[in-house]
Amino acid sequence: MSTVAPAFPLNPTTTTENAATAALISALNMTAHPEGGYFVETDRDSLRVPNPLKDSSGDTRSASTTIFYLLTAQRSVGRWHRNKARTVHTLHKGRGRYVIIHADEVGEGKTGRARVETFVVGQDVSKGERLQWIVEGGKYKTSFLLPDEETGEESKEGLLISETVVPGFEFEDHDFLRPERLRQLVTPEQAEELAWMLRKE
Image (cartoon, rainbow, N blue to C red; front, side):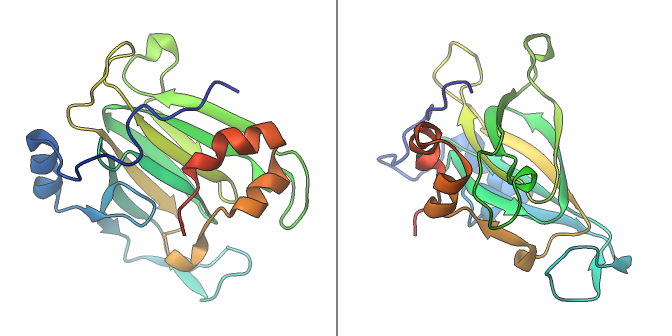
């Protein structure tokens, strides 16, 4: 696993976004997301489909939902969480690192060493940066902002992506990773390295 460390302060001295980022948030009508960053739902399909998700209420779900999601220098981390449904991510601008714990390969409630995957999303595909990535349901994911340039120190407008969830997102199909579950899923060394991206209670 590549070294996973924050590129921007986790507790910035100011919560004021720079002018370009603030203008983007305003133009897209975004609000703070409970995972970190900002979001706005841009589509919720009116088509209802049978609910295929285990252990969730409701007979149907929207066929799909889509949001814009933005990480900024002031809100630079999307905390560990998982969705029951499949999520397709599409990059619009900026760079970031994603870390995935493949908990679905271990089994719910079971103890075992899950596979941990990490990759950079960005425009430089020649270096392996991804423009699009898919996270299947049942996997824990987290993300954090990287500088616009590999050797740089700033992100002018943050990391802006779209997320399309199939079937459509409902908060009851979502949960945050808890410290004890993290320790069950990965090695002690990995748990120590990854704990800073847990949601603060």
